[in-house]
Length: 270
Image 1: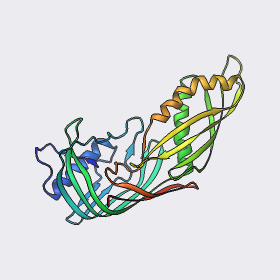
Image 2 (image 1 turned 30 degrees about the vertical axis):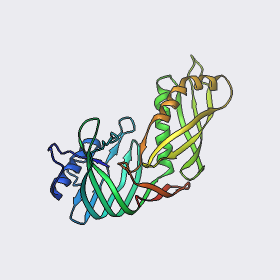
Image 3 (image 1 turned 45 degrees about the vertical axis):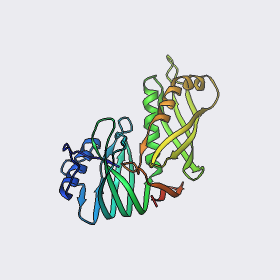
Image 4 (image 1 turned 135 degrees about the horizontal axis):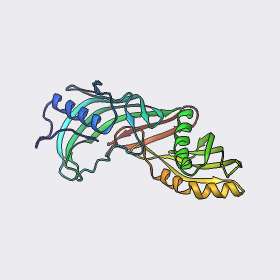
């Protein structure tokens, strides 16, 4: 599903209008180079290139909220969406999505009245999303440091291991090293952080079950200081595909927990 930057009472009626409407929306919702011609529309092909676009997990793209007034839209033999890479906060995420036999509908967002380009049906599609372990480590580390900095806790480094944990999730096992200045003392600490990284049907990643593990006075202090930040992390959405798949259903989801971490899946509405 795409929001469309299209103010007319009627939905886009030509390839040029559709291209301009998608491109305008991408520029509004992602940080995209204004010189970047990211959309190509022909009678047979819709290609969206979001390479070098930036997505913030603090202000992610608005999730479309369709109504129930769909009208038939364009059909394309081929759909291609790619970002090589997309920047999600500090992390580079590689995205490649291809689909065949794709039909779209038009609808309006119930929140703000904007036109939506809705995925009506798709014969078959494939998606491949990957992120380097170093980028995932940096992404998690940045969020933990944001919570620690406001309380005088100094995070010096994070070691991260991952392992497969079900068809759509990986288990995270991190060690956080740092110190907490207390007057003239700077007691060092090393605590464990465990949790899961799960991918939902819209290719949105979420952290869950985050827990700090360890003993001692510093550990108790960290639990109190970082507990709320971990809860905030669990509420954040990390969009991997730049837009929701709508009515399409993921199948054959596989997560390769090596380096880079790779999520592959097939999807379709048939």
